[in-house]
Image 1 (cartoon, protein in one colour):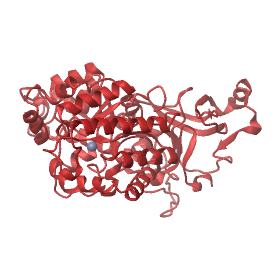
Image 2 (cartoon, helix red, strand yellow):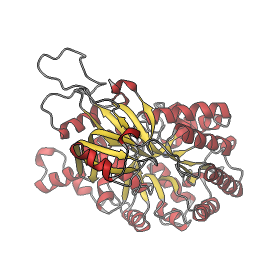
Image 3 (tube, protein in one colour):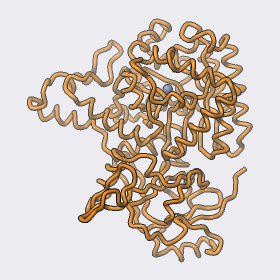
Image 4 (cartoon, protein in one colour):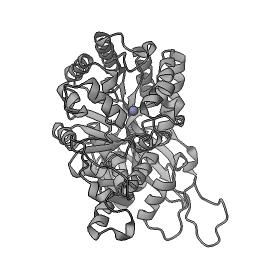
Length: 503
Ligand SMILES: [Zn+2]
């Protein structure tokens, strides 16, 4: 059942990532989006009238965006909507609050009490609606959400996503291991965890025949669950043909505890694999401390990694070796991990991904993929050289390779995330047949001689006359925020509309 909308022509500059390191910039272009929210054609403005005729589109029945000829001198462009591959909607009220905690103490101090409070439907409604409004306003058109242990609360999140028009995967947190969570916020046993998760998934599936909002099986993380529940949850995902999300190797204390709790498995990833949880529709968040054997297993099974740099730095968890994962063919997307991460913005995640990748190159920083015996396989890059001046050329080249460029972080924010969530044929770029999940970005007027303070800038971004698109994109990633997002669409439906853009 697809909703029908008015055919719309979008005109202006379109920018998207065509592969990991390349962006395509289409100026003076029009994109036609059909009544099902799909891109019907992409054409230079000059040839639009002929394209309309060849598609039998009646000009009188077409809506335009911007609706009037755009006289603005501002630097603006359409960009694919962002995909947040890992966000806890239930923790949105706590974003920015983490004190001096690390993962396990943060869960106990801040997170479990908040999530439990969302068992009250009115509290859940407030938390979830503000989360969705906020992420949409930041350009997130798809989110892979963790809700809470409550089936009712999880249903509320799915309903609000449908109503507010955000593409989403919504997961009820399964957690039946009483050793690692408080008794007031824990499934009574494995059977309860499995049955409640199935009930939640079936309810979300039945409520949305359009498939915009889908369920995702969500064992919270290894320590939250027993082997029995992990295996039962994997069976539900296989039965209902729905994806799986969970956490992996976020923090060293957690990794050590997993090894002690599940001594029969050679690693964290092997535990998940043996329980049936790894596969092409599985998203694993963090992956800061994987061994080479685990990376190979993740790659072989087609599982993907959600890189959550703002969370990893806030909780001091570790530095995810993104370059090595990409080099080995592992799918990688970005996640905000609110509220381990302080920001609901995937633009901030892109920024932090760039920053973390550069931090990894600092002399003395231990980072990378390890062997199961614990030996770092890239020690020579990061630790043998104590100062920059004495580094050899090959060491400098190896360090530089670890750095993610602006283009690469934007790729992870769009197409990379789409690959993680099995949406690569549907969203993440501008191609005929893809759905119109997009954001309209305004970087303000160019600054030149005679500039008057405050005249024409939008938010923190200041674009100076003569800057090329490469520099403008860098300005956006490192200085931009939701003030630059003027409109957002999901499957052709306008879900954010800041009218000022029409002036
Ligand atoms: Zn998380």
